[in-house]
Image 1 (cartoon, rainbow, N blue to C red):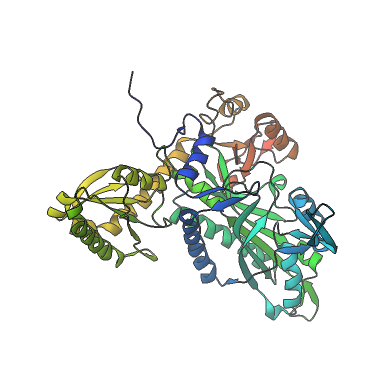
Image 2: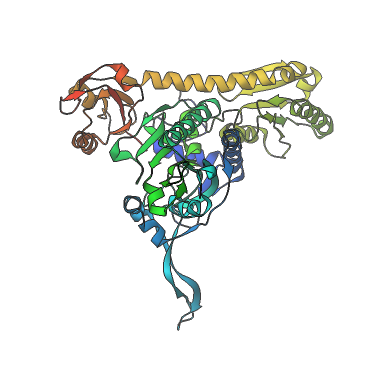
Length: 506
């Protein structure tokens, strides 16, 4: 019987993918459950990752003319009620504040008091509160376009939660823009989608498909929702970001009007768009392995950890001096838009335990330095993506660090691209479609499926039937759908103009 490889994470991805995910989050010290049901504490390593995500995206937004602002956490219920479809879409997820203070009751316990004249909804999304503000800011076509983004938290009352993927409170950015014409608003919606795709692939090393959501999957109140969809290692899809063309629906609800060039009154055309801490969940499930997290270098909180191997106390000072000199030489180099960030881990703990800790956290490069390495002016380095280990001349290690980090970044992207390609299939037969999405092993339901490129007639009835029978949804309608050629709907056999992307999803 073959000896099973020792892994840092149990169970492995193959044994129990959902539990593997939870264990990676904990082992990598990214986040943990809080005392508030459904909410998480993001730990320093996880929050540093979010800060790097925020820094990269924020730079992209500002380069395209967007400005940051901040809007209230509390939204008057009357604001939500102005857009019926919107409030209906979020009604079941809203947390509502009805009182403004606490008082001691007869038994000494605190009870709500001071009922509010109007209930306040804790921000599930900000279209309505920002819309009322835009109505004050916009008076003339000269005030357009108005391009605003905010970094904030939101609350959506979830019954079934999973760290980063779906929590009651989470962090995100939400962009809100107003435009003079429909064409400009549509161009903005697509611009942001393309920025999200660029960020996902160039920073996160997570390949995504882009396209439009069906009417049934559209953001409540939107005219059109565009999305990026990524394939996770269990072959499910993750909606990683959305960009919404809102038409004039929210402008009319919030009375966002402007004096046109012709002197009349017109309603603005608006958009909204956002990504969240769900991106961290996406990175875990795209790159993580059975030893823990694997960090793409462009977003990793640190790029290199130097591990002094001190077996004799008399060697401590000289080894630490060598390690700190190595760190100084690495830190003066520039990796894309950041300095190379280095940790010298001189904690007085077992060397093996220390090394495994960094493996689980996913730092791209580990460099060990012991007496022999110091004597040879070398380091013993390990790449997290491949597990490759080798002794390297110290100066050579420093000289090649940018090239090595770039190689890790590109390898992670290519590996994810290859995995998606292996698990994407054109399917035009109904029986083959059902078989593709039916688990062959109930104990390992993730060992099947993927992205099915199949025909759909456009009917909501077929879309719902497939979802009800197989728990499969249309993840995106590709922009180039017509180029795949016409065919017959996978469900009803009626004419279809081209393939759409079906998958099980988070």
